[in-house]
Length: 558
Image (tube, rainbow, N blue to C red; front, side, top):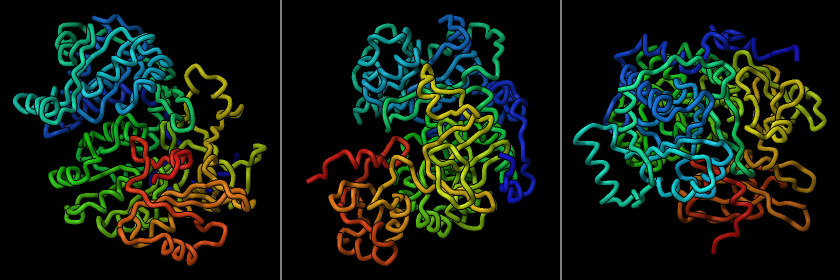
């Protein structure tokens, strides 16, 4: 691919290429931030703040324990199963500094899902929040796990607050099941032991795997994307140059509501803002929207990342529109399509444009981002970021012209090494020329902006016409009375498939006939919903991405 039309539309000061080899590892970027911002706040949660210097000291202690007491060797895998809490960055940076690999685990996994991930990754250690220890106990048999590290949500908050938080969770809210794992050690004890041990010098190669990031669980068996230190460093460099003019080094406060075990928050918040010397203000339970809004009222935040459902949820929570947004300079949406209705309302309420970005677990994750100086929502996922090529291909692998719809393909230093121990699956998505086939249907305009049309697997075929659920959802999300909407294809005798929408109402009086009438006004015949179902909520992933597959598979309630 010779032409890169997007370069002519790059924001001022953004280079065409980045230096992916400036730092040998994620830990090296962290060490540079520690040197520059030692006394600045790095991570905050539940009223407790850790400085860069404190995260440096505590993560070094954890690294020393892993290498000294446990005798782990370079490349060994350590699973981390925690929501956003202070233990997460300490454990993560400790594992990376020790030359080991982080296996991020969704704490809401069932024992069956966890067993697969532990078995597949060969993790020998897991760090788990007490609330989920019973799942670990059930999933352990038959895996390579030889050490479990447990911790309470309050364990890093200091006395008396930490003890109070742990007491409330265990005894009043009963959120911590009674569970004893033989041989388990407390996280705080690992830090105490590590403090008495030397931290040996560990040489990390840029091609070493930093994270085994599991993906694809919603479409089949979960696969571990091998993200190397170079992949992550490259993506930090790419994102940092892109948002750099919007950022004040050492002064940013970013709201981290998406879980850090998810690739979007991990890189965009946990790593990029660490590089900038910013503070990650971690929200442990963003699903409690009234509680989330109360937390936001206490913080002079300058940036926030999220998915469409998170922004929509905040906009529909009383009190959100009364917050002080005077410092907010950056709102980044990713993980799923941002809907126009949500983006426009966000701008109206906060005064800050909701900038859409696009990425995948397999691209560490950022691949395209809209310019930060975007005046308003434009419906695009943005331009390919520095050192990134993108194109649209047909099923035969031919590159398509401007405006034509095909599969979006990405190439760049942030593209994963492959899937862990799955050369067959790797070969399906990484071609001989190094292009990653994303599974997303897209088009490119003449300026190099890319537009996602939909997931290849979610496309609905009505009488030979392609219907993209995103388009239907975008239209109906703007309808008064609709809070959330998902569109799916259902079998139909006449047309092969027909469009069905599942709606969560804002107005309880909303009827199916009103929805159909509204659709008639904005959508051509074959795109209009034949079926309308109302539900109290939509099935979602842990980060709030709507699971269309579950809607397709599940029988209608009632």
